[in-house]
Amino acid sequence: MRKTASKTVKYLYIASVLALVATVLAIGGWFGWQWWFKNSENSQANRAGWDQTLTGTDLSANAQSGDVIGIIRIPKIGLTSYMIEMADTEDKPNLDRGVGHVNGTGWPGVPGNAVFAGHRVTFAHPFLRIDQIVPGDLIEVETPDRIADYRMTGFTIVTPDRVDVMDPTTEPTITLISCHPPHSAEYRYIVKGTLERVDAKIAGQGAWPSLALGLQRSAAGLKKILPTQG
Image (cartoon, rainbow, N blue to C red):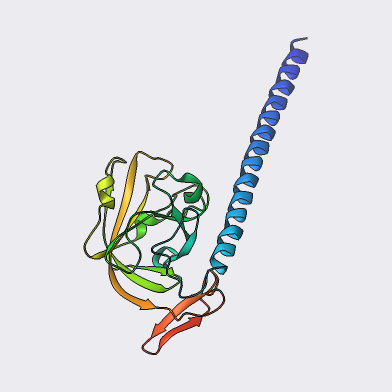
């Protein structure tokens, strides 16, 4: 009897463990599918919005919340992401779509503090490796009418109430903001940079190259080339 009871308990234990594992896998799969579907949906919407924008269009004065305003590239961390105009720092729906430009802050390539925010571990997590950017690293920001090259000058870790990191500047600067450490919103990781150069893009009909295209600039102007990696 004891052996039979012991076997029954053992089988029940194994069955319970297997049921728990199956439940965890099912829940994880559901959330994974939701995450993939949302990212795919955002990517398609972002590309469509960008492709509809004519080269040479100046969005600095009329960018609206949700507009795809450009592409940001940080070669050091392999980042290429669409930039979405955010209504404010609390505009999570647009922040979830990519790298968000905080409305009311500076515009890329001109005097002022251009502020961008991005997730560290959720959705497309564009700033996952933000802490690997070091002084001198390139931060390239492309809008429909210009391409601005910034060089990283330093970083700091602050509490979320330190909104002064977004204060205007008289010089053309850039500020990148993300949560810190990963999987936590206790602090904010702040990257600062200053403008090195800016090039105007030639106006014309049709969309500027899609996200898969890189840019090579020379004294003769702008030349489109395929990147070595995505």
